[in-house]
Image 1: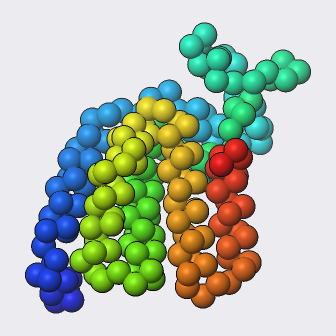
Image 2: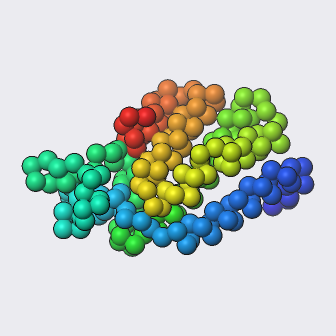
Image 3: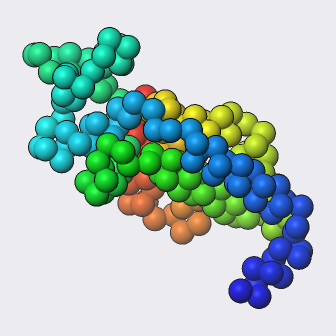
Length: 193
């Protein structure tokens, strides 16, 4: 624990900014609700051995996001978010708080951004400020705060986390099988990325 205290004493500014933003983010996500949850519904269908979403659960507003094929309704985006949500949906059902996954992805994005900055030769403090700049000075903050409502934002976060991990791997040990797997996972999250 003393290592964390020493790290904090060396770099209090960026850590305080990140901690404050994190506290407000957690408060917002706790109050934001779960939205309609297309990916949670797809996870529920996968648990039942299907890839289509039950049309009885749909209203006219959500039909516009789906594609119909032979009388069944499918979500045309990648399936990785639904696969990642499977354990939570299996345990809790459709009420699984999607915000938990969003927070985990935000932490992963911050971690991989820090690793990339360090591997590119930035010092600890500068690497932390890079994380602050990405998290608070880009559309990423909006995506994190709205990913519980709009499922496509969840795919963006998952894709970004996979691609940042791939870049960190490339600048690190360069295990090509790992790079291929991470880029493939990002494609499973959002095929057009």
